[in-house]
Length: 426
Image 1 (tube, rainbow, N blue to C red):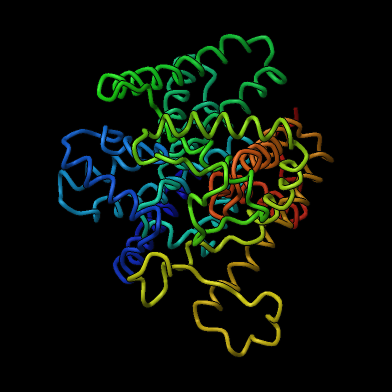
Image 2 (image 1 turned 90 degrees about the vertical axis):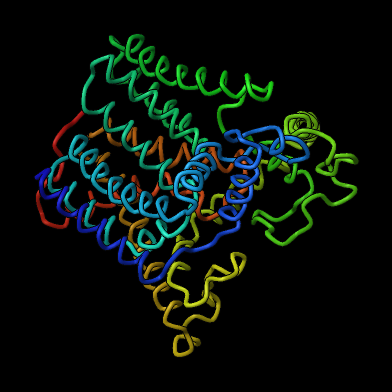
């Protein structure tokens, strides 16, 4: 069956390359920012972050992805190699999802999961961007596969290192590390200390090496993106749960406004925003917590950020998105554009995945498959809550959770065949 997974992944890779060739690169706001920082670092002659990208800047961004852009520009003077790499990594993520599902459940569910993954339209356009989600998610899946594949401590060490590398691209690895530490504690208590120690040792080694390297260059021990307090301080004055893309970034009279921000470093700004946010949170804890359900709903209300890859005109990054007339959808069906029809199809697909996932939790509980139930609930529910507690929930922020939604949804679909699709009980 592994050969089948490989064949599907190879076909998916070829398909993604065709999408890239036909529809081209998709500029995004974050991607344009990565390119700007990359050119600054190349001019300065150092990797990211370097002094010019810290001084006068509001935060340290996704370090791994920006350095990947720097490497591509340095070696090839082009981002095309990155886009090809994104296609390859996306195809690898499909294979890893199948192998993880095979380890946790069985081959039949794994086959359903990989087919759902490659047929899901929102997965088709992601590799036309230079955003950080693909490398981060693929590395996370690789680390998880290694954890499930063998209990050997050396392999757990490597898994921890890879998950820290994922964190370097986008800081979500800590959620998955925490999930597996709890998993070891609950289900493998006799080996908990050794497994946890091996996993954390690999994780901490990467942090130490990368952080020390940055400290020697800049004087700051930086090993991942640090946008938490930049985002958190916005919650002290924004009333909406939705992100405001075109709003004033530093409105006067708010806690985010710093008088001489341009003369401070990103780390100094972070410390100011951190102190202001903590003081505000102490006084208004319930005001902040009331936003969490709305943030969660907004993050999961749709999943079509990558459908914009199929727009005919993608010249302007800020216009590369699609919308649907949700409130008058039935009345406007005849007036939908082709890409809106694609978005509607993707939305129906997505909501069926969510519905199937909910049913799968019931089936897992019924069959007493507590190990898989714990992992899926911890990653999907626990991870999502942790994310929206920290930042506003953009719809694309759930990208690390989508493979697990698809894996869990595959259980319900397998159940439709009339046989028990479960391989293990725990």
